[in-house]
Amino acid sequence: MSRARRPDPPPMPTDDVRIALGGTIAWAVALVVLLIAGLPADDRWWLWVCAAGIGIGLFALWYVPRLQAGRARAEARRPGGED
Image (cartoon, rainbow, N blue to C red):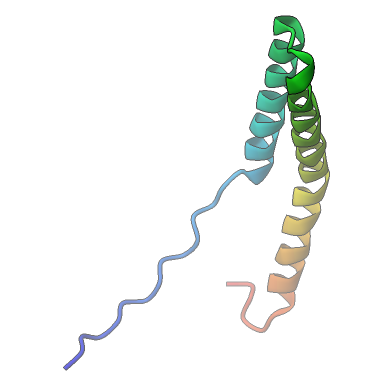
């Protein structure tokens, strides 16, 4: 015999823009630290890693609000989505 399954809890609300902003700031700080520390020529690729992290973070800051708004619109269009 199996027990009755309890309903799934509602999703936990999160502030995804703040998370993306924190990550972008962390990559920017890492870039500044590496520029100040001075890297050997063989390790300069780390600068590009930081630059890519900043670029992805900036894209996320642009994209996440649009993604969340689109999901909210889709949820509102679904029958029973206005609970």
